[in-house]
Image (cartoon, helix red, strand yellow):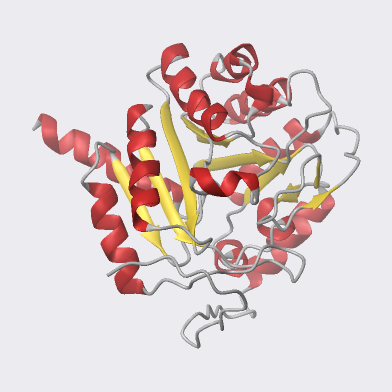
Length: 301
């Protein structure tokens, strides 16, 4: 049986550990490249548990428009406050990094920039264009903020045809009052719906975390709501408290429980579901797309 526990200060289980050899030379190469090009990653800023694994494979999720967010979500490890000026060289520098790292699949995300009229949509679009100039065959996934809920802002990005439009619900609807007080559950659903209206050929993707006090009926409600937007891909991972200042973990789900949740999500009309303790929205993103492409190819045989 799956339950959402409500107690605070839940002890972190011993099995919740991830080890990667720090002697891997790729890790320092990626760090040096990011430093030299003055680039940010969500891997570093959000204290992702997969950072060393991803850097060791010479991959990273680039974070646009600085590393200071205009919002202060209770679950997030990214700093909040007065945002930085946008680096006009960032799109070209990301394209350089993509080429040097030998990436075939690129994930872009950003801090939320409520101070910008377009929420950062134009900067996303410029970056996608620069990457595609480097190699038109590169796949680009954009994990976006809500662009202030504007369909026009969303269209700015979709007009340059990213391969995947990703926007996370992050948590169940009830938690928005405490976990995402400056965001809107319905607005986030509308982003996914509007993406399909504007360009149905672009795959849509969304993710959420477990361990924030959710009940199984609320998880099912969230999955139903995502299905209603014609969302293609869903990712589900364990919430891990980035710091003592962030919202405390309410429950650590076991691998067996994640498997049950994945089976539930797979019963909905999604093209792909990734679920697991260390699953994050951009983690192994290329593998999910390859899985979808292989399934579609086999269905045509």
